[in-house]
Image (cartoon, rainbow, N blue to C red; front, side, top):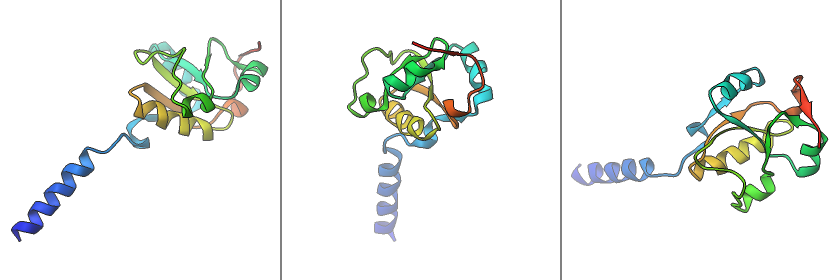
Length: 123
């Protein structure tokens, strides 16, 4: 019985020390983006440069998922809060996980620019 308790205790400790998971960040709907901006969050568009240039949310920073996968965080600040968006919601989930694991404060957008009806900027 004592050995079982020790094993269960070790499993609990090891599980608690694991890395952050997707449940460690919030996922919001498109309609909530403005309220997060009002709270001081910046929009980070994780689509590739050509997609971003074709149309993005005003003042959004572009940090392609391909760069985040390589742990290239130049141009973004760990002390800022970010709203992560892509085209449909798939890349933003992956980007959110990477950023979350690297101590960024983020919220993921469930949908993406394909559903965005607000104003866009083009480069």
